[in-house]
Length: 334
Image (cartoon, rainbow, N blue to C red; front, side):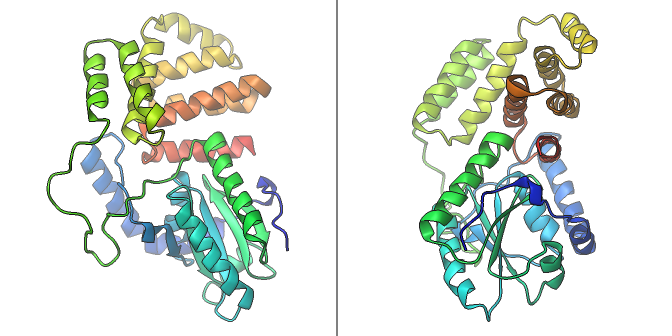
């Protein structure tokens, strides 16, 4: 069967799935939250790079919310519904695993054994296997059922990656082939890490920021990203420097007055959201822009959406407020 075009119209009701996993995940979530708060002191924490082996996982009903829904705020999750007795599954699953590893952190493959997870199969309305879905920012996209040529599956997954990045700012997770694997043995030496090729440029950007030279900092970060577009430190630094440059000459009272007078004015709401974020009101900034996306259309709506994605970069993908805002944005867009 040919992969059909991705659509948000097939969103699955996951309330029952979430309820089933709540009891088992509750303790783990509480521990994770406590660790996150202790580690960050109010700032976003980073999970760090993962080994390639962590890109393909088995999921069940109890862990679905933790392993799929929550992770989908950081990386598009592909769901492969399969069974041991299914011959087509034996063709498709290895292909999906290989393509996921090749994607190098832009995708995560979650495999669901339908014989052991009948409720998940029912929730997704699956009539036959193999069946493949995706979850992005908590939203479900039906991909295809059956086995298709590799070229078509590649194209479908590439489209998924594009949708996740352009609409939700989800760029995936960092993969380190030398990261500690499941066996617990680190492959890399435990000594001091060598200096990276961009350390001097990154240090120059920090010095420029400290000196109030926002233009110099922006350019330094852009120089790094020109050679290494995936450099997370440079992306975060650039987003922060650009935000500071935007608000530097603002009149806060005038900006907030304009935003209050016209909730549908995208420029006014974007400027007010920048001030919200700089003032530490992260959820207010995100909520303001999500609400503005809801009441605008066309180029205005896209401008607001893009600014929201830029503010996500400032806070960091691992922050739970970013995950919540991405989910809210997805609901508004679809």
